[in-house]
Amino acid sequence: MWKEKAGKLYRKFEFKTFVDAFSFMTSVALLAEKAAHHPTWKNTYNKVEIWLSTHDADDTITEKDKKLAKQIDELNPDA
Picture (cartoon, helix red, strand yellow):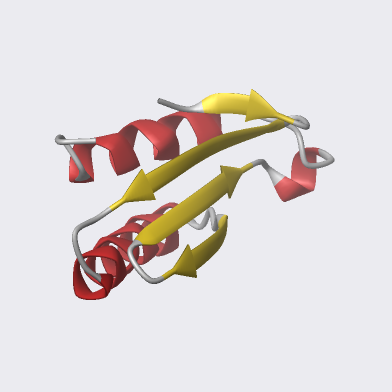
């Protein structure tokens, strides 16, 4: 579930393995590139943290962020 933290949408995902986490990140990267809307994120072993905000809207949450968050959720239905 996405939470609003410091004016950004935030979510932490946890996977069984590093490869699963990295595969997820690759899928997110493709979505982000297609949308021309790139996340701030961090990966440590099997965990991925994502922050979404719109940089050209003074780093606030916009519809672009909400749309990308929904697409990311659809990649990981078990989360």
